[in-house]
Length: 529
Image (cartoon, rainbow, N blue to C red; front, side, top):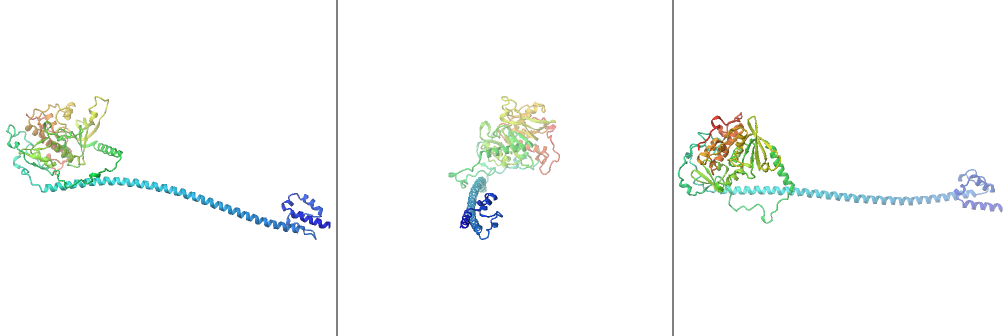
C-alpha cells in the first residue's frame, strides 16, 4: 500500500512539473529527491529517463512532456503565424502608405512641372504673338505703301503732259547738265562766268503763274484706299522699354564703329552737302558719313529768302530736281518750288535710305586730322558739348578718319565756313577773304566753277567756296548749291580712283588715286564782282 501511495505521489509530482522545473536544479539535488524512491538519473535527457521494472512513471511523464511540447509548438506556430500575419499586414500597410506618399509626391511634382511647362508655353506664345504683331504691322505698312504707289502710278498714267515739260536744247548750248546724265562730258566751262541776264529788264513771264510741272509722281490725293487697320479699335503691339533703348544704342554704336574709318566725310548737311552725299551714294562701294552740328539737317534750305517759303532754282539745275522727284512751277529760265522744305525733305529721304550713308546730326566737327600736309579726317564731339567748352572742364573729343573730307560749312557766321577758317589757322592756306557783295548771275557760276580740292584731302563746296575765293554772294537762289555739291562728289570719286564725270565718263576707271586735284591755274582763281 505504501508502495502504491509513493508511486502515485511520484506520478502526481512528476505530472505537475515541467521539464524546466525538473532540470532547474542541479543533478545532485534531483538525485537526492529521487533517492527516496530508489530512482537513479542516468542522463538529463527525457528520452533517456526510464522506469524501473514494474513502474511507468517516466513513461507517463515523457508522454506528457511530448504532448506539452507538441501543444507548445502548435501554440508557438500559431503565435508566429499570427505575428507573421500582423507583420505582413504592417509591412503591407506601410508599403501601401509609402506608395501612396510617393504617388502623391510624384503627382505634385508632375503638376508643378506641368504648370511650369504651361507657363513657358504661354510665355513662348506671347513672344510669338508679339513677333507676329510686329511682322503684321510691317506687312500692313508695306501694303499701304504699295497701294499708295499703285494709286500714284495710276494717277500719273492718266495725267496729261504739261505744255512746259519739254526743254529746248538750243536754249542752253554751253551747259552740260550733270544731273541729266552722269556719263556726259564737259565742253567749255560748266557754267559761264558771264551772264546775259545782267541788267536785263524783268521779263513779262515773271508776272504770270503757270501750272505746276511735276518732276515725278506726287502723293495721290485719292481717298479710295482706307488705312489698313481699324481706327476705332487701334492697339499697338506690346514692347519692353529696354528693347527700345537697346535698339537705339546698338545701331548707333554700330554706325560709329563702321564709320570711324570711312571713305568720305562731309562736314555740313546743307543743300550743297546733301547734294554731294546724294551723288556719291550712287556708288554703293563708297561709304559716306555726314557730320551736322544742328539737330535738324538741311542748313538754310528749309526756307527761301527772308524766311519766305518758295525756293528759286535757275535752269539747268532743275534737271537735278527732276532726278530726285521734286515738283516745281516752271518759268522760262528758272523754276520755283512752292516750299523749300519739299527739296530738303525729298533729297534727305532718298539719301538716308541708302545703305552706304550715315548722318550724324547733333555732332560738331571741332578740328581736322592732318598728317604729312594732308587732311585725313575730322575731330568730332557732341554739339552740345562743343558749345559748352567754356562752362565745363576738359571734355575730350572723338575722331573720324577719312580718305577724303568735303567741307560744306556754308558762308561766314558763328558756325559757318569753319573748314577753311581752320585751314588758315593752321597755315595750310594764306587767307579767307570772305565773299563779296551780292551778284546772283556771277556768284552761282563762280561757285560751281571754283568747287575744288583746296588742300590735299579736303574739297570745298557750296557757299564756303565764295568765302575762300572772295566770290560774290548769291542770295536766295539754290541751283549753285546743288550743282556744286554734285561736282564735289565727282572730285571725291576722282580722288578715290573711282569712275567720275570729270574724267569724261564712268565707263573707264582710274587705277591710281589722285589725291591732289587742285592745280596751279585754279588754286588762286578769284571772281571779279
